[in-house]
Length: 286
Image (cartoon, rainbow, N blue to C red):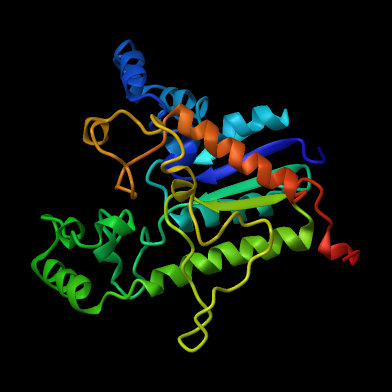
């Protein structure tokens, strides 16, 4: 391998949430003050994050590649946060040619609305957590909102909302990272957790914009890749236990078995496409 470690960014699907809810709760019950203990990445409870990270797809992929790993992911994380952290880590030289950078993107709908006043983004800056909640616009409206804010947000989501605006924002985060890593020869892999890339060229030419081989199936998601592949691959929360999972549901995660399948899929893509031996575009070799 050319790279010496993996650094992965993402949301709860990258953290490893859902690995085994029953066992996780049992362990936490033995630590009554775990939420007040040491903080980990982005001030998340370290004891919880370490437990989940040990069962994440990142861990299983690192095992297959025989390299150490670091997970820089946040439960509920949004794409702009991932993008900003990656850019900051580029600038600090924390990510370089010795690093396999992986980003598993979340829903494009987890975004701020640039044309809302700043006060509208408190305390919750997201439009929706995921696309499956689009019909439940009431979740976007909060009791603590002022009368006008509540009135206007309801008007916005029922009369004005165009989700392509959010898709285009996330598209640009992804494309810039793709081109930056290409320019500097940084090994890179990106994929989607549970919603595919949706941006097309324009209204006349509806074909998808091309991506290089570092983007694993941009028009698919890891949910799409593993759903129906095997039994017993989803977390054991009560709301999911007795459902036959055929489409993504908000807050659904793989369990350890599901995360191992994701690691196998991404490993095959890395080896098949030789992503660990990337040539530096900046050097003029290609």
